[in-house]
Image (cartoon, rainbow, N blue to C red):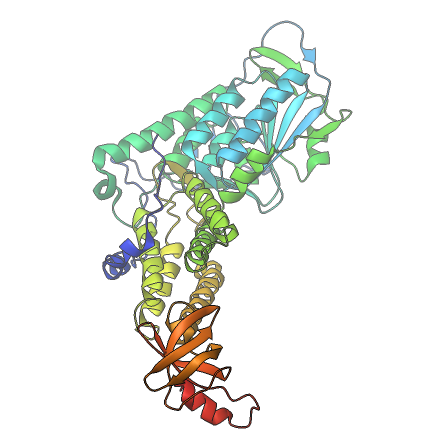
Length: 516
C-alpha cells in the first residue's frame, strides 16, 4: 500500500503556482458515504424486551438497533478437556493517538516481549481516531497470532475506538469499553466529491470490500457480531459502549482498570484453540515503555507538530542563507525538514494543500526581494494558513481515520504568526543592511582616518590610510603629519580633508565626508 508523500521542494519555485493553487485548494471538504447498490432500507425500530439491561448479551432472536436488526453471533465452541489457569505479569500498553508507525511498533513489541517473558496477558488501553491501514493490518496480525491473551480497554470515558481503532478493538481476545465511549465509523471516504468520481467505481468498491473482508474476518475469528462489523465499514455505523456490549461487538463495559481486572478474574478465554482462565487481580503490573524511536515517530506523526517542524525548518534554512557561517540554524533547519518529511509518510496529506503551503512559503521569500510593501508577504501568509489547514486529508484511501483529525484555523494561526514575525524581522534586517554604509572595498575607505606623508594639494600628494600608502588630493594644501579623513574615492586616488580633532565643527565634518 502506497503511503502519501510530499517532497520538500525549493520554496521559490512555488511562487509561480501560488495564485492558481490558492484558488484551487480553497474549497471546503466534506465526507460523503459510499453508496451501496441493492442495500435494503433499514427495518423499523422495535421496542426492547422488558427486563433487558444495556450490557446484556443478544437473545436468540438477535439484537436490534433503531436502524437494523443484527443476528446473534455464533457461540464459542470450547475445546474438551481441562482448562489451564494463567498466572504472571499483566503488561499494560497505552495507545493514545493516531495509529502510526510509532504506536504500531509499540503494540507489536509489547506482544513479542510478553510472549518471551511469559506474561499472563497484554492490556491495551486504547483511545484512537484511526490511522494507517497498513499499520492496522500489522497490529491485527500480531494480535490474532498472539500466544498471550490480549485485552483491549477503550478508556477513559469520552475516548473512542474509531475507524482503524474498531478493527484493533475487535481483534482482542477480550474487548472492553468504559462508559461514555464509542466505537465504529470505519467507512472509507474520499472527501467532498462523489467517491466513484474521485477513485472510480471499481476502485471505490475495491477499497470498501477489502476493509469489509478484514472486519468480518476479525469478527468471525473472535466470535463477535459480523453483521455489525460489516455495517461499521459499509455504513459508518457507530455504537456506544452499552450498545456495543448488547450487540456482542465487545464483551464488557467497565469504568476503570480495577473494575476490568475484577471482571476478568476467573474468565475463560479461547487462546489458539485452548481454553485458559485469566487471574489478573493478583498479578503484578508492568507498563511497557516506548523506545526512543517509537516516541519520536509518535511525536512527529501529530499534524500540529509536523506543520511546526516544516515552518521551523524553513526559518532555520533562511537564517543560514542570510547569515552564512552560523551553522547551527542551518543544521537544525535541515533536521526539522527531514522530520517533517518523515511525518508526511504517517499522515494523510493532501498534495494540493502541500503545494499551496510551499507556494505560500515561496511568496514570503519573494517579499524579501521585491518592493511590494507587504502584499506578497500577506498573500504568502494566507497561502501558508490555508495550506496547513487543509494539509491533513482524512479521506486518503491508505488511511482509516476519523474525519475530525485535521488542523483548525486556531491551530494554524500561532504558527502563521510566528512565521510572519520572522519574515517581518528579516525584511527589516535586509532594509537596514541596504541603507548602511559599506565597510568593505573602496567604498569602505570613505570616512577612514590617516596622516599626510607628503604634502597634499589639488594636484596630488601621499597619505597613509588603513595601513597602506595612497595617492591623495585635497581642496586645500595639507602639510606633512596633518591628520586627514577620506571623503571620496576616485579609482585608486583618495580625496581627503583635514580631520577636525577638537570636535567643535562636527556639522562641517559630516558635510566634508559627503554623508547625508
